[in-house]
Length: 173
Image (cartoon, rainbow, N blue to C red; front, top):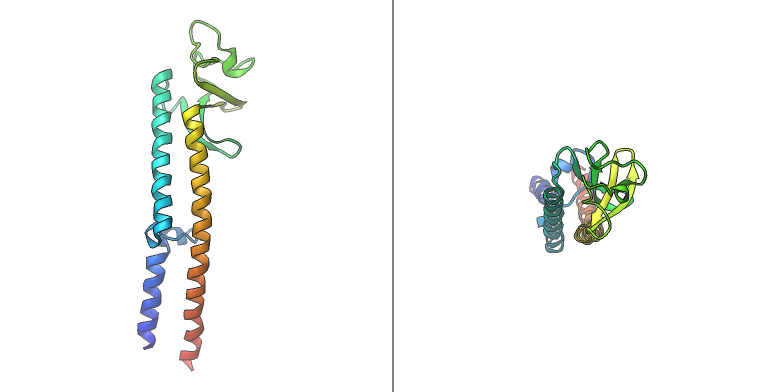
């Protein structure tokens, strides 16, 4: 009876919620709980892999170290972008960022190169490529869809859990 109900309740919670995230006060539904969520989680992973691949390709193309000089960042303004550190030799950011790179030493980030400067910040220069921009947009849209789907599932689980909790006080009587 009562113990069996609580055991089933505990199993539902364990199967539904990501308990590691719960410790951080994040109510996250496990992707494998729902086919729609799993499909979106897989798409997010594939898109993230694509972002990483483009980061590596640009690093090779420009001859920049991925750990110290060329960073893949998720900017609040632009979404996923590349940032070249301001202290990178040959990539002087003085006087206008990448478009100021007209010297023979390093003209890799100028118009027509496939790189688009977004902004110059204290830590360096944000820029993107056509492929990176497409992937960043896809990632953002999929992440938003994932959040909406997950929110709907959280409401369902909370309603089910609430129904279980109503029974518990009645059983104590």
